[in-house]
Length: 422
Image (tube, rainbow, N blue to C red; front, top):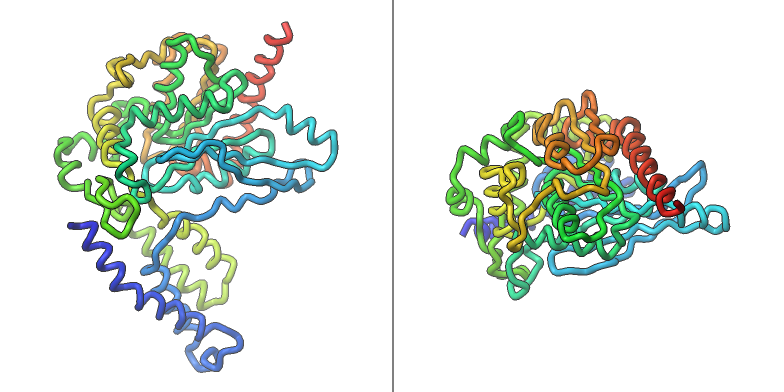
């Protein structure tokens, strides 16, 4: 009933939200007589703050329409390569109008960015994608909000996630591919590549794993502690709800996005309160640039999706409670996951010094598991001063992490080319 009560409250708040939006515009619009009244700026700022606190946040667009390479701008289009019930594989394709750059783009290594299915949309990795587009052909997994997937499509488990990744790797072509997984998908990506290697299938040229829970027994964080302090039935009984009738996925069992969002905010309530207060002050001062920055951040941060219940509970049990991957006890659809079977794929791990979601050592554990990868093909990088989001978005990502990732991919793309020529 909680989901239904949430929807009822949302519907009840909608008229007030629309009214607040209208009020903000009436007291701020240059052509409105209300904007000339004493205190109009304060009224407009208060109304907009009320509007943004109460409004619904839909999935944002990637909005990547052009990319700058060597001082020149090139158009970018977004297209769907594979469309599955729970995920779309997207390609961001660059276009050039001269033969030299067409040839350069053609030779750029393809990269599959596996986005987390952990509350936020794949657009959270917009900065990751835009930066990678300078030197790579970029694909990304765009996970679908579970409330929008009809119940007749069936359940979605962590095993299904692994199979999706395998299919996407085969579709793009494993021989020249480089895979970057951010946070949660480091586990299923490592499983997918391990299974492909054990079967003798081609595997990607390299894996770049960033801030992921490969082994949460290493340096556990507050997030990890919560997962082990509560039994699995507690998560199922308290966090899993049915999608209401006003969505295509009516009746599907999910971990609702609004509950996940509440958990995100509860981790740092003072910071979010201060951020909203600063936004109000920026509007009063007329600091439109900082106000717009606040809007962009919270348009993304507040846009959350529902996760399939089966997938969420599988992840809690397999990754955080039983640690089946690092213990060598994980079976996917009857096949044992053995990272030691990977031999022809280079491995790079990236961790943030101040990461409070995936503690230091959790991602690095992949190196010990991938015992078949030669030491020369392994690399670990710690981003000093970076939290969880800083390793894949923002200035530290662009200036510190990306050059390391770019050079790692280029080095192993070049080694593959040399081997093919030989």
